[in-house]
Length: 484
Image (cartoon, rainbow, N blue to C red; front, side, top):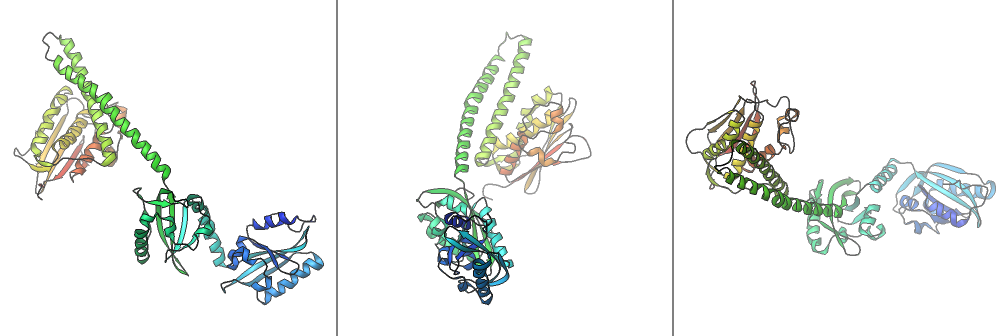
């Protein structure tokens, strides 16, 4: 702010605008000590609206030291035109409290005659803490609403004004339900009363089902975090309000894109691949197909089947992210599911020149689960084992039923996982450095889907480390029935 005692007289209007925007509590008094202008900070300090200070004498707010100041201020303006500083002066506020303040008095010449500006700076820790708290409140990126234990708004920041369309003077002193849609008000009051009895930090509206109401009556989705504030005046509750309208719009747009992607993958990719595989199977029955043609057809079939598996994996992953993995449970024979998966993988193992073996108890293993999904998990683990095992190696599948649970091990003699964190293997799109270095085909989706299938059956999947080479994946399932 410009020095108020400049030689050139101030224009009175410019002076008042400058004082009103000052960063500290400031009042302007005439030569008789009557307040003519007061800014908001002065009102906060003296616990009165700034407008209510106008017309009062400075003696109204002081003790003996304030009277001394009054005389010094008038004398400075009238006689000497010098600045006066009064340290640690007691000033009384409208609530009966006192503040120990430093006063800076400066004579000001204006086009209306002489005035005195009085800057008041409370030096107490409480005031400084209050000022810091209010500064932090205004700097918060979210709308901040402070209410007392009765649900009455005591403080808001500028973000609340912008978000709700109210001026803060319209909100302070009002029930917080003024910001809540009518259909929620009764529920909100009951929740508020319960929160006061057990105050704790609590997020609300994370599911996007919470709405707030603007001054014009329109509603918008919000997230709110409640936090208790213990003060000398009792419990206050801080509510951080975040407008999530834009996030909801982006989520809806994202859902639309996902739906389009899902439809595109289903129709534009899966349909022609299924057709290619179907016609390929018909061509394998042709007697006049040359050996070279058979080899070419075999390559086409393998490629189409691999791409179809990738498309199915993508569709499964989209379904998992959308609403979790859906399973259709029934009583099944786990031994048969494992045996069929091994037989389905045997052609790929033979083509890779691997020995594929199966060890089971030779009897039915009753389980309540989704036969197709469990077969998909087995296929993914077997496909991984075959891909990462060099020619001449072996892949072994072991089914061990026990008391109340069954374990399935898929053991290979491949390259192993090295020093990798086993949990990383199940992350979406993760590919081990060895797979990248050896350019092993894959999209990093198989293990992610296997994990989702296993967890949907209340089971576990893990990598079992051993001193020998290769990798062992172990799935464990509870053997419970529908009535359990």
